[in-house]
Amino acid sequence: MTGKSDFTDDEWARVVRAPFVAGMAISLADPGGPIEAAKESMASVRSATNPPTREQLLAEVALDIQAQLQERHNPAQGYRPTAAGSSPGEQVVAELREVYALVAAKATAEEASAFGAWLVRTAQDAADAAKEGGFMGFHAERVSARETDMIERVRDAVS
Image 1: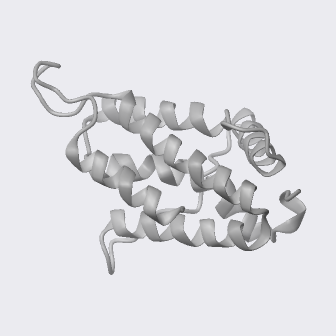
Image 2 (image 1 turned 90 degrees about the vertical axis):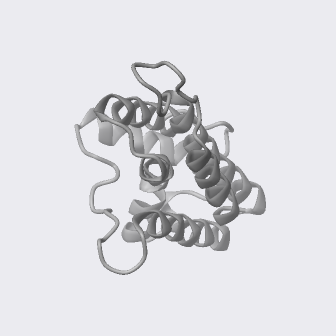
């Protein structure tokens, strides 16, 4: 079983913020207004604190996230896509790919698979949280084409 002790402090910080980075991917894919961003962020928090399975790695990540949130610390602190180089969306996908590779190198195959599925679910939950486009909710889409594309990119990065 894999846990926090299997990672350096810097690696663990990246693993813990990965669910938030997955949620951020959706906000970057199809930026909405402040209400949509708040809904997507809250959906990311809910998903990040409720792992879909009981693997020790996922439980430890979720507990660490819960502890940080209770102390009013931002688990995603220290991560921000830069303006230089590739697009922010590409940078987010690259970060998720790197973190998944890190987890896959240290965790069991089942844990790595569950971790990757959790990141995809977090992105999907963020996308489902707010409608995109339209006017005052009319003709809005639950999940936009750009969000659907980003979910697939996240899935490819973590599988």
